[in-house]
Length: 138
Length: 246
Length: 116
Image (tube, rainbow over all chains, first blue to last red; front, side, top):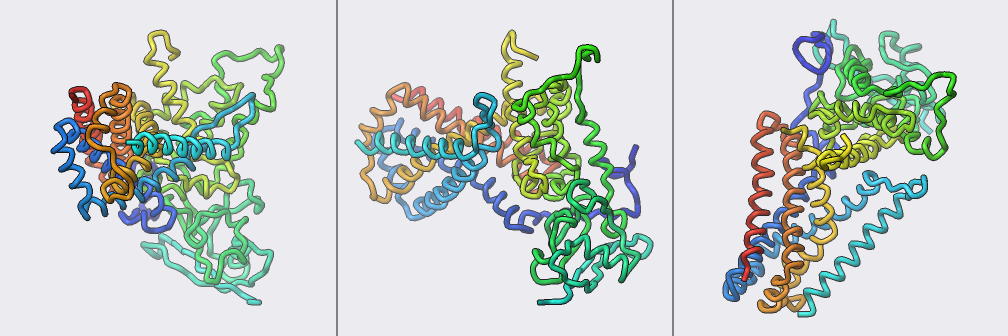
């Protein structure tokens, strides 16, 4: 059916603009999308911190103390702050995207997006409180 | 109040240029005019050589999609007064090959649309004597939003994935497939899943969400695609079960 | 193998994203900021160790580490593929991303399983 470009019949006089590698800077929406995707790196960063924490915990009190001290270095605190902001960004965008993907029907009627959204935030608050309570009571 | 507004239109005449150039026109600024009115004014009074598509001029045919100030819009629905200070930049729909001026080739989409079988697929036909396929209002509600698509292709111009990977089936085609999957009269969900599970199908989508923002008929193609992903994932897990459905 | 596996990988991505969204903010805030900076009293070694000894806590921690790692792997893979247009390296990128997530999860799993 076509020669040359595979997705559409090739015609030598049709004009095709190349998509720049900087396409994601062309609009605020696109940039926001890429930042949202980059937030996954912050998620991976903390997962690695957790792994390191678990390994330090397994090796004993001295190793754990060294690890805790490393976390308190200015570089790590700065990295954690940046990661925390990105993780918050991930959480908020995730909650707002969830109602689109998760359509719940009760007795034939679609549950409104606002209900799904507030359930997400409620779960977030409850879990945050539970984790904080467990880790802070010592 | 200003009397005229500048319109900067992308011209592409393959017989005389290798790349699109902008040509500036001055059109009357009327409160009730849309960009399509401005283009028709240009064609009628200023430059008869300008080529562009349009038809119903009321937002139901999907013919007049173009980039207006960098955003995919139906020119029959984009008021001159909403486009800010001139000049208003009008370009052909992004990510499609340009045939001439503001006219793009949409064969790619037409081919993809046919591929997803956007019609009622039945394994067993009901004889006419048995009457119609009945559908409750709730059953209609399940897919109605996705049926509002007018194939205007604004979503394709908004989707960066389609721009980067032109083999991607795209928002409208997947949303229309889902419209039929959700239709209680349809029995073709498995066939469509087979087709859209391929690399260029729904899994190419990364939920940028721009398609839904661009859609003039509030179809929410992004929602359709994510729901389809969820349904496909559920189906995938069911096929793992020894006696699960196929 | 890409076609049969994609729905499964997407499910891991979704589950991981949900775990990260609901639980990472509080854990990161406490472990990465509040405790090291001294804003809040950190649990001592014996308290933390005692907590991790519960098998349910170990399961929780395994899920807390592994699912978000697979979330990152899936998302980052598509970001490299689309954002940097590295289509020709698609197989390599997939192996690196999911491989890293697998190694991270295995490390966490092993550490939790063998912790005394």
